[in-house]
Image 1 (spheres, rainbow, N blue to C red):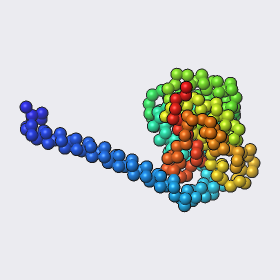
Image 2 (image 1 turned 30 degrees about the vertical axis):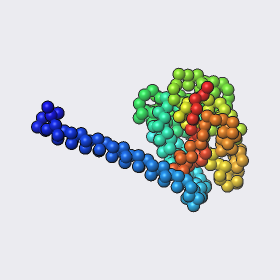
Image 3 (image 1 turned 90 degrees about the vertical axis):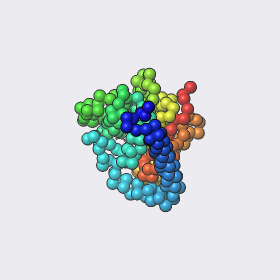
Image 4 (image 1 turned 120 degrees about the horizontal axis):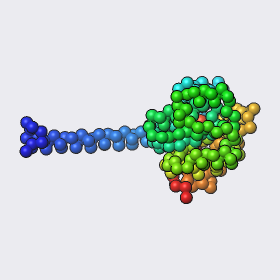
Length: 273
Ligand SMILES: C[S@@+](CC[C@H](N)C(=O)[O-])C[C@H]1O[C@@H](n2cnc3c(N)ncnc32)[C@H](O)[C@@H]1O
C-alpha cells in the first residue's frame, strides 16, 4: 500500500532516498562551512600584518575613549562591539543559569547579559558586583525592563564577605559563567581569579577583560595604578601556571582580531572537584 495516496511504492522509495540525500548534503555543507570558518580564523590569527594593524587601530581609537561610546538597550556599556558579539556567542553556547560580573559601572554589560538570558528563556540571572554603585546608575538599572534578571552587590569583589554572597547566590546553579571587569591591577585580578574561578562550571567561560593593557604602549595609562607588567593579562598568566581547569580560547581572539581581552577568554575544561 503506497504511503501517499496516488503514488506507487516505487515513487515513495525514490522520494525517501532523495530526502536522505538532501539531509546528508545539508550536514555535509554545514560541516564544510564550519571547517572553512575554522581555517579562516586560524589564518586571521596567524596574519601578523592584520594582528598588528588591529593593535594599532585599538591603540589609536582608545585615545578617544572609544569603548565609552556605546549603549546596550539604553545603558552605557564600556566594551568594544566585537567583544559584545563574542559574549553573545558564548552565552548562547553555554546557556548559563548564572553570570557573575565584577565591575558594573553604568550597568550596560549587566543589561546585555540579562537580555541574552531573557532571549534564551529559562531562569538565568546576572549578579553584578561593584565597589561603588552610583545612585543614578542603580536607579536606572532598577528601572530597566531587564532588572528582573539582575542582582547587585555593592562592595569590593575581593572582599571575602562579598565573594561569600556570590557563592550563596551560585548554590544550585548548574552552568555558571563569570566576567572580570573591575580594578585592572595584577594583584586585584589575580585575587578575583582565585575567588571566582571555582564557581565557573565545565564548558563555561571566565572572561577577563582589559588584558589588552599589557599590549598597549607603556605610557598609555599615566594616571592609573595598572599598566605594562601590572594588569589583567599578567594576572591571567600567573593564574594559568597553576590552574589546569582553564585554557585560553584563542579561536575567540583570532576571530575578533579587535578585542580588549586577548588571552582573556578562558574556557573551563574540567569539573571543579
Ligand atoms: C570598566 S568599569 C566596568 C564596566 C562594565 N563592566 C561595562 O561593561 O560597562 C570598572 C568598574 O569597576 C568598579 N571597581 C573598581 N574597583 C573595584 C573593586 N575593588 N571591586 C568591585 N568593583 C570595582 C568601578 O567602580 C567601575 O564601576
